[in-house]
Image 1 (cartoon, rainbow, N blue to C red):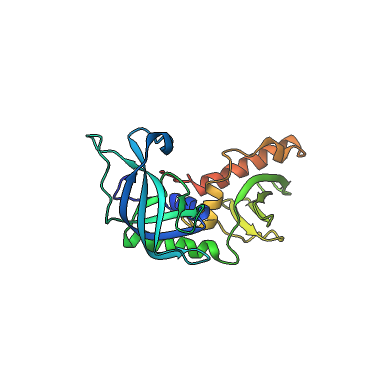
Image 2: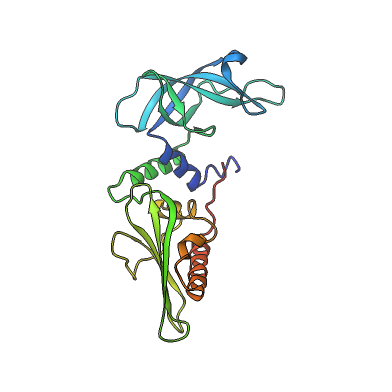
Length: 250
């Protein structure tokens, strides 16, 4: 990932969905930690304690103190010195620590250099995540079913997905002679044959593209006749091609 490009949509979605608290803050003091207390930092980094001033609470159910502290792994310069970050602003993706003014980064990359465009992207993602009808996380692929049509080239496949909340999500793939195959995603108990593909860089697209396995699990077609299982596998690949790569860069 280049600095100019910034984090991808999926990078940000990973952090927004992991972090109950998102803060814009300015680093005020960096304190090195004794090696026997700091733990092991990645090569080329040093683990430090950062004291920061809170500028804005972007996500969080309660207020945070005016100043917070957290551990972070800062990169070292080519001369082995700490990168200077004092007075720089960051977006922090964190969870509560063991005291009110202490927070914990949700990942090594959860301290991101602030910019107005980055904050705008994060705020949009937070809003999308908190909507009442926000798509749930996909945790596994459930059963698949295939019904061949009455003429060659016709058929329909339904693939049910398991989610973190238990809410129903399913894929439907429809093939008609002389027409390009159509697939879509249904959120609800009723499978909607007119459901559309999710647009790229939306939360529903992220939930699918970054969670679905590359191939339809054999357990999903275990009860199907061989020919129908093959058709379901083919239709699943159509979905994966339509989704494209997840696009993580961190």
